[in-house]
Every structure is written in C-alpha cells, then in structure tokens.
Length: 491
Figure 1 (cartoon, helix red, strand yellow):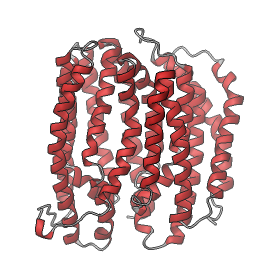
Figure 2: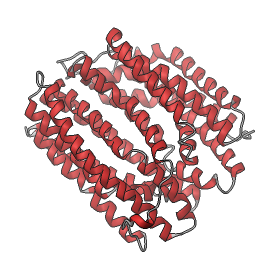
Figure 3: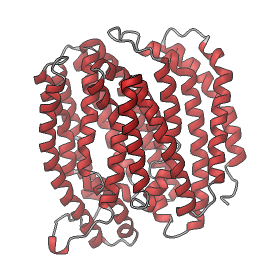
Figure 4: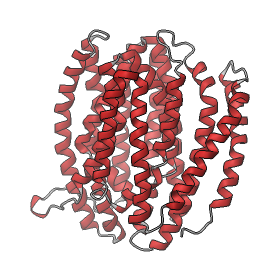
C-alpha cells in the first residue's frame, strides 16, 4: 500500500472516530444534565479525569514499544517483533494490577470528596465501573495497540473504536430516555466498550503470522527510553487532566460541569485537528531513517497544510461559538453556562496548544523523548503552579490563563527543537507561518464577528446554515494562503 493511501486511510478512519465521539459528546451530556443534574455531569467528567491520571501507570510502555517496533517491522524480523511485544505485554500486565489497586483507592477517596453533593455509594461504584475498561486495556490490548500503531494501521483501531462508540451512544440514549439509573447506563456502556477488545484481538491474530507474546526473562527485550517517554506522558496528562481535578477540589461539581461543556466543544475541535496527524508519526518514523531530505519537504508541506486548516477551524469556532452555546445549553437551567470569558480563553488556548501538533508528531517519530524531557517538565511546572495560584483568584478562567502561559512556552519551544535538532532547518519560516496564520485569524474574527452574531439563530438547523455560509466565506482567505505557501521549498 502506498504512503498516500496509508495516510488517507488513517486520517479518514480517525476523522470518522472523532465525528462519532463528538456526536456522543454533544448528545449525551445535555441529556445527562437535564435528567440527572449538573452535579452528576460534573461528577462523570471529573471521574474521567481522575482515571486519566491513573492510566499513567502504562505511560511510556506503548510509546517506547512503538519506536522499537519500527526497526523490527521494516526488517520483517518476526522474532525481534515478538520479543518487543512480549516485553511490552509483560509491563502492561504489571501496570494493570497496579491500576486496579489504585482505582479502588480512588473510588474510596472520590466518594468521600463529593459526598456532600452526590451519594457516596453511587460515586464509589461509578469509579469502579468506569475504570473497568482501562483494566481490560492493560491486560488485553496495550501491546496490540503498539503493534498496529507502528505498522501504520491506526485506521483499524479508529474504525473499531468508532463502531463501539456509535453503538454506545444509541444504547445510552435509549436507556437515559427510558428512565434507567445513571449507574445502569454506565454499566451497560462499559460492557459495550469492552466488546471492542475481542475485535482487536481477532484482527491481530489473523493478520500477523507467528505472533507470540510469551515473556522469557532470560531473553527479554529491553525497551529503550521507557522512563523518558513516561515523563512526557506524565507531564501531558498532568496538564490536560488537572483542570477538572482542581475545579472539583477548589470550586464545585457545577463549576466542573460548566468547564466540561466548553472543554467538550474544544476537545472535539482538537480531535479533528489531531486527525490530520493520524498515522503521520509512523510514516515520519520510517522515512527519517531512509530519506531525510524527503522527510524535510514532506514535513514542511504537512505543517503548512495543518496550520491553514487550524486557522480556518478556529476562525469558524470563534464566529459560531456564542450562538451554539445558547442553543446547546438552553435546557440546562441549574447552572450558568453562558461564560463569554471562558469561551474567549478556550479559543486562545486551543490555537496555541494545537499549533504544536506537527512538531510533536515529528519529535515522537524521531523518538526524542530524552532530549525534550526538561522542556516537558518546565511546561508542567508552569502549568500546575500557575493553575493553583490563579484558580483561587479568577476561578475556572485562572486555569485557562495558566494553560495559555505554559502552552506559549512549550509550543514555541517544540517548533524550535524540531526545526533545528531533527530536520536541521532554520526555524524562522515556522515562526513566520505561525504569525501569518494568527494574524489572519484575528483579522477575520474582527471583521466577521458583528455580521455573524447579529443573525438570529433559533434552531440547530439555523445554526448549521449559518455555519455553512461562515465556513465557505472563511475558507477563501486560508485557501489562498495555502496555495501561496504549500509548494515552497523547505529551505
């Protein structure tokens, strides 16, 4: 299969996954808020973030295994492949047992923390049920995911996951509408999500010959940079999972619910942007060892395409967000979901954060976890320190201000490192591309804000029509920009 075909399959499958995930995110939370209340929605969002922290027990294993598998798959060395998978599977199982113990402790602590707003027994069982899928992931799929990722077959993971999420949306919607308890809904949801592991196992067993994950400690493969990759995963998860945790501690579950609604919208946008990088890590990982000049050219074109797409997406978001929030939260009356300051800060943070995706993809493809570890630690320290200070002054907005500071540092640093230390290119053009795209976003938002928001929007059909017109109009300047810069040489 050609490289272009692989890219298209991976991006298409991942886009499908993100669309279905976003669909579930936009359908189920409002229904949960209306049926069970904002406190319950805040509880569910917070539990997801707490569990995300616990998944750090596997962090570094998969990333190190993917980098190691590039060589084995390129050389078609099945023996080396099996040794790497066996080592990864061994560490995943150890992490799985640790995760199970940590999950039980979390269930007890979280039930105690939120007992004044939510039933302690409900919270306790909810944590255990929601975390069960992760336990299965540790024991049965972690090493398979690394194999499929390294072999440029993330479209398999995305397609199966998209199918399970779609079934989950339909079933959960029916259960909630028919008055089932939130605990029952989550239990059925966990069963549906667990079923995907059977499909993953079936695919891997039938498409990889002589697959053997037996761990022999006397001939065990030593995964390189596991702890360095762990540091990156740890800092990333601390940054991206800490907001709801801190809001739960310092504010309330209703504040967590409000934040979660905006995070859901911008999280969907982030996933759409990440779809453009789906499969690119493996492709760059292979090409870096064979043709560095071609890698430079392909990366620069990919970066230009990505940044223009990012500019268009966030311009549309900035223009269409206010009417969407009014429609989306019109039935959520037990908390104030109209937060213009939060919306503006989410927009700024999203632009700066996601500008790093191409550079981050290249750093991971090159396996430069050790060299970039200090910068990741600085980013996490900046983010957590500022968040703890700012949340007590500005509430949820303080969390976003802290993120903006840390992301400005880290995203610009990633661009510098990728250009200078991996591709041996001057970073001037990368920064100039940033400034050009950011300026274009600002100009279009300034010109288009009043005309777009002066139009009355009463239904989602009205909003879709407005979005279609806005999307076409804003695509013109970014399309022109892409045409002008896409085929320029890398140097």
